Each structure stands twice: as structure tokens, then as C-alpha cells.
Image 1: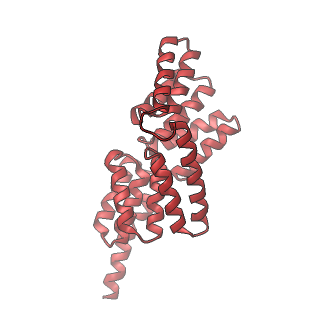
Image 2 (image 1 turned 90 degrees about the vertical axis):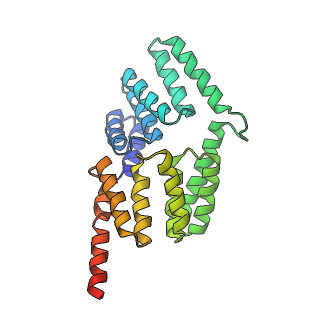
Image 3 (image 1 turned 60 degrees about the vertical axis):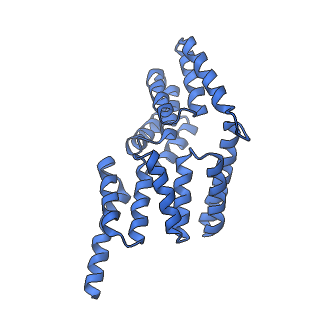
Length: 239
């Protein structure tokens, strides 16, 4: 099961009030993607609902260390702190949530921009399913402009660029993501794939090896790691 599937499983388990299942799936996803604030936030929610408030606060803190303007993490942290009787800290978290949600210079509040970004993403996902990558790129781009901090959407944009064979655009997007979030394994897997498609097999190999150092059981990185060797063997045989 890849990271996206683990996150989907965690969300589904939360919706079904299966907090143990949600915690299990999201912890595994967090181990694979330690730099992914959304996973930490969801794990905090699951822990809080499961009656583990101290552990939940720790996860919200990790999410906010990655993304200090994460409104949902501030709000859920505040609610959990209030339940723990830590009222002064809870009030401060509520204040930070308000400040983050009404940042100066933004056309929409962060909560509204998040909803809009996710709507554009869902439409883009549909275009991907239909094989309409030009339209998918347009919708992912709208989403990223609204919320450039949503790394999963930026990674999807890079994938759509790849499917359109716009490899240089994909390369720039993935390098930008990893410049700020070097532990985002899914983006690094895709970066290796871009290098592979560009014929830079040794560079691709190094990227996938780095993925396995961070996430030893990552199935895509392990599978892709064999591709450059088999590709070179095929070229040598043809020559």
C-alpha cells in the first residue's frame, strides 16, 4: 500500500469512527512522509478522538513546525488543549488560528482558499482519470496558486506535467518542493522518474536510493530502482 492509499485509508477509518485503524494507517504514512504536515494533523485528530490528547497535541505541534500557518492544526490543537484544561495555551492557539486564517494580502481567508484549492484538485483528478492532462494541469495550477503549501497538490501537478511530457516543468516543480521539504518521499520518487525519462539513469538511481534511505519499504522506489539497470541492459543488447 503506497502513502496516498494509507492516507485514504486513514481518512476512511476516521469517517467510520475506527480510530485504531486510522491511527495505524496514518502512523505508517507519517513514518514514510515525516515532512507531510497534513498527515501529522490527521494523526493528531485520530489520537484526540481515541482519547490520547497528549499524543494528539504532539502531532499538532509537529504539523505546525512544518507549516506554522496551518489553521486546522491550530484549531484542533486549541480544542485538545482546552479539553486538557490548558486554557491559556488553548486561547493562544485559537488566536494563532484566527491570525493565520486572516493573513494580510490574501484575497480569501485560508479556510476558504483551502476549500477552493481542494475543489480545483478534485476537478483536476477527474481530468486525470479521463486522460485530459492539459485540463488537469490548468486545474492543479489554480489550486496551487491558492494554496502553495499543499504539497500533495503540487506533487500531483508535477505528475500531470510528466504525463503531458512537459518534463522540464515537472522537474522545476519537484525541485522546488524538495528544496523546502527534502523529506517528502513521494515527490522524490517522482523526481527520479523525471530523470529516468530524461535519460539520466544514474541521477534517477540516486534519487530512488535516497527514497529508500528515508523509507526503506517504499514499493515504488524499490521497483523503480531496477529500471535504469534494465534500460541500460536493453540498450547495450541492442547495440
